Length: 524
Image (cartoon, rainbow, N blue to C red; front, side, top):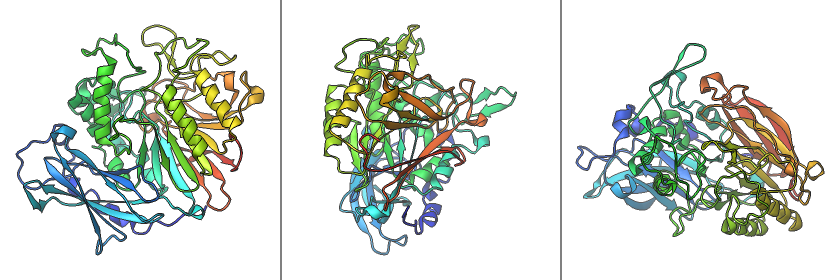
């Protein structure tokens, strides 16, 4: 692959967390900023960039007090020549977070940036700048693309373990110098309290950094915000955020396990039983803590298209907000499905209009893997497949409609990426093996978790004819990160041949499986 070098990136990052080096204690970062603090504003939670395109991107920061966000960009680390962007006033209404959109950037170039926080009453008083860098998408096909994906962070009570080095998987991902990172959901586990220690099967102890907000399930807006802040206590993640742009989607654990609209919880841990109330608070915190291009729209939606030049469009789905209730999922008609009618219409339109060589469908849940929901004691279904190998039923009907649409519109280069199930695998879907046959073959690749419990491989449902070509998963449930089975995936698109190569990797970057796909085929 013709991939540009990353000039000066590592030296930039040496200073990227200078402003936060002293803020390592969870008690220092766990509470909301006070209004009367001595000194200058500080950005102890690092910086992030998101939804970067050929000419634009979003920059995120959080202050420890009210401040005006200022971003400076430059083509060089020296900032000898720079451009200044005046961002929002950061206050309590957004938990002192803010995002600034950068427009008119040069395509395919390394952008160095620094964020300054200015005292609202005296703009000359600014805190120590926090620096980062990112590459804009290239408008030239020959430059190629490399990106990573995974999901599931701090789940099942496995949090930031200082003995383990924290979230070390981010170091392996950063070493690959990706153009961006796609997080496929479960960025937090709002329903998963984190205790100071957990006994491991071998008699040793897993130790967690803890905070007040992570001591119980999240119900209040403050508690949801605290869940997002928790992950930013990890220096590995903060370094990665300053180095690699993100494309973020959400799944269930940003709110609570296996949630759906209108649900009333029977979980005794919750005093607030309405999932709609919890989801509203979670969505606000989610929108505050990630740079996402669509969340400031009037509809505040998560689903969106992120275009990355002539080689790639990423279609980010939301399989939570518009789904029907979890059930046995065996109904013979289902207009709402897992996407909702409006999102399905949007996806069809975007796929039809796309001229990119590759069309990655970022799905927060797998298609042919059976994911049960037995939280209320009933044999309900959480994802799409329900285990019946016959003709499409329930949510499968909507996916069948989409696959049929892709075939008959002759849409080429579709690849499905997902996480959620806490193991890694590659599935090839083939009509000749399927009960439903009106589609073209395609691949689905699964990765994750980043730092959470690992689980055995899910059962397959034959409705769309999946064949599990590769899988790595434990035989026991909720294996800690100390036991391995933490994964991420890599996608390389060659700028000359157009070939797309998927690599499934372990926590340290070891390649487990490789699949090369050829461009220009309907489905894939």
